[in-house]
Amino acid sequence: MSDFPADSILVLAEVSPTGTVQKSAAALIGAAAQVGSPIALVVASPGQAADAAAIVATFGATRVLVAEAADVATSLTVPGADALAAAARLVAPEAVLISNSIEGRDVAARFAARTHSALAVDAVNVSRDDEGIVAHHSVYGGSYNVDSAASTGPLVITIRQGAIDARAEGQPLVAEALEVVSSGAAAATITGHTEATVAANRPELRGAAKVVSGGRGLGSEEKFVLVEQLADTLGAAVGASRAAVDAGYIPQTSQVGQTGVSVSPQLYVALGISGAIQHRAGMQTAKTIVAINKDAEAPIFEIADFGVVGDLFAVVPQLIDAIEARKK
Image (tube, rainbow, N blue to C red; front, top):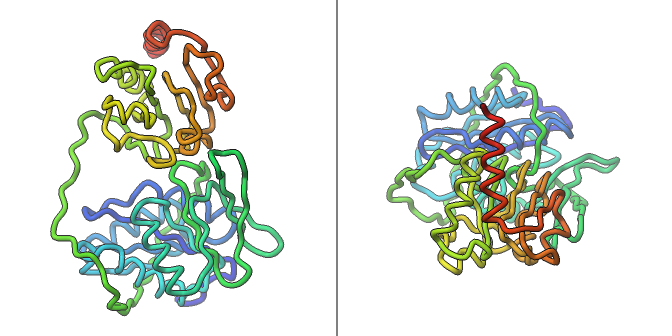
């Protein structure tokens, strides 16, 4: 089974140490299906790979290459880069799609350097023109849209999580074991891992479909609970501006922006956020932006689809009540 279509797009489907296929895989395969034939690669520990491959097929992968790596749970990113290099030699893809996660960026960089391939980072979409695959980017806080392509060889693209809505139709599982020879490259050793305990049933910020973020306008850590209340009402993740994080309202892991998490949800609600360029760089590609701020001149209103000029402590409770009433 080594005959792959000429328009093959190789997708690295990330698998967690516990064997869970990351949800970013569905969007990556959906993006690949828009421009070619999605061929997925699963790299997982023995005993986890088969189940992961079956899930990836339901996301729309026409073929699934399965690399069982006993050291995937103990060697950081190198097993993934080794498997990706072996898969690329076999498939000869037009492009390689990888999630723009922390691990995904590491694997993409290693693979691109190893194979002398062009690397396009943090793309928000992909397309095809007469010459091949094109990656689309939103840069400088969303001020510019930029396209990139490779002049030779496959284009390696990391995709911003949540940026692509397309989903492919599920396919029957067609799996093939991939032989991988270890590169012996230096790798950090993982001595153990612990699943993070989530305090509430909220989506993870990175890749969430809905995000409610709060800024310095909340005034205190105690009042920031209003952001969490609206998020829970909407079933959204909680984010924050850098100013709110620096003020100690919420941990840095919730920071949205150039030095935090980049999000591209269907709905982004900004409460008491002025809209500094650093923050806008991490959320401007959201499909719908709603801003509530008492300052009518706040820059956030320049990019908002819907804006409310008013006291958020008066507006947000009414919004929560209205949403709850609609649920009944």
